[in-house]
Amino acid sequence: MARVVVDVMPKPEILDPQGKAVLGALPRLGFEGVTDVRQGKRFELEVEGEVTDEMLASVEKMAETLLSNPVIENFAVYVETEAASEVAE
Image 1 (cartoon, helix red, strand yellow):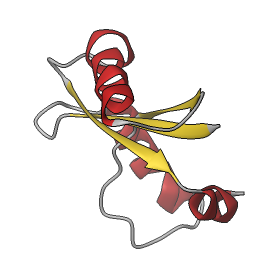
Image 2: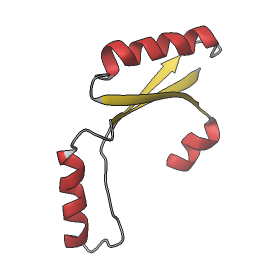
Image 3: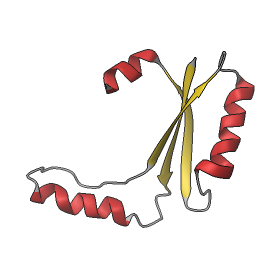
């Protein structure tokens, strides 16, 4: 089984109040040096079989129609490798 990831982020011109709230909280918690925060969403889709161009096109369609709001958000679709998922754990 493969894992396809969809990362969804607000477009750069869209205000991000959640990101601004996190940015404001970081110094109060003792974290310095962060100049901007943008908050988004991550979807991990476990898919059967081999990841093909057709499957990736289908996931992009999912991202366009359900997982994101294309008016205010951008998205990226990619296949997560085992090495990347091990680093995250």
